[in-house]
Length: 407
Length: 88
View 1 (tube, rainbow over the protein chains, first blue to last red):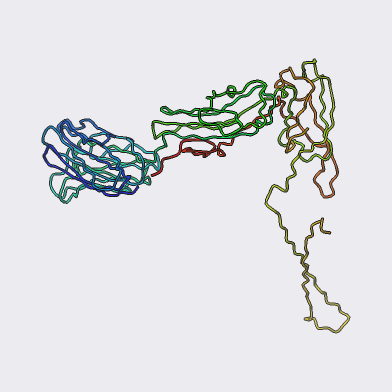
View 2: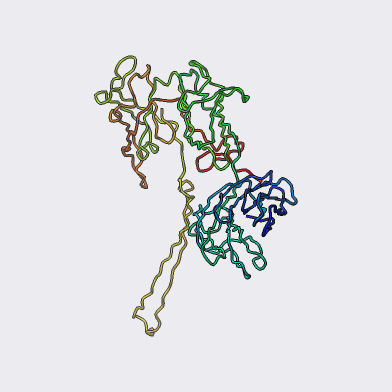
């Protein structure tokens, strides 16, 4: 998370407060606002969070609002309230994200407050607000445990930083977080987090072309099916058309999952045709996306009714067969029947001519071999050799493997 | 005829099959042949072939490769097609 700029403002007593921050084009400017009476937020900003009054004695409340910036420059945020009182605005210009959304919040009375757990890796900014603070210098600042976040707040040497922000670029601890204001005694505390993320596109599409349908010369039937997930505010549509050339958008017809491919008629000759399938995904909530998988088609030719397929067990298939295969059907066991009546027992021998020759499926094997031998000469006592004249000799040799076809 | 990789055999009859092929007892079919025993100087031995299933034939039975199409603002990852994340 890149922070382009951050500034903090306060009014000990007032009905209007304006803050300004410098932002780059594309930044999201986050404002954390604390007031004590009916509040008017600036136009052009979007509210992410409102605490309602969390301290009845003071009327303290907290807002988190944001504005997306199209061009670089200063961004102002003016807040007004109906009665004079304390006001705080923290402004943070964030770069590198397309979207921001409310994430989590907690309100409790104490000298510290527990944060809701977050999903590890999520980039968030916490907003913190207290109605009370130590009233004499040194005022003290906000803290968090574990102390792994960056704090944005007023200078506590000069001000009571009753508004604070903690920046978590995603690396912060996901659980067991606590925020600690400088209170001295238990008071109401409000915290809320907003998450920054790259939002999903609002819509997208994909087009697939299948030429397998060209095997069908006498169309009989078809099925198109897929697996999908459609969270709320998302849509998926699948459409298809069989055409000899690239179709226009209006040529596609909507498909229904598990039903026939539209636009095909019994008897159609699909040779020379291509089946185009178009998938459209949309979302109106950029935090969620629909998803689609396992898209399959079955297209039957009229002649398919005359054939069956035996599928062998994976580890007992005939990929290494040498010569002919024989298929035997035992009518006393099977009940296969056709238009002409029960199929009689038969035995048919054929040569599987379309097996694919494949090399060793593993990495290429290169074998280097060396041969070595050790020989020891043993002293023979027919000469007057001295006993210490034992001679040892080492013999080594190198062998080369030759491919059998090269012999 | 056989299909590639030695796993499928298509049997074509002269007339349309009318029985429910999916309920056919696979024990009614036996496939036999020979192959080398994978030893140096190996000899031909009977192959150990076993039918796993019987089904009607489909001229086209295709799982569409969802990564292979023309994708606009979509991504294919982990076997799933989703909307792409926006870019700055």
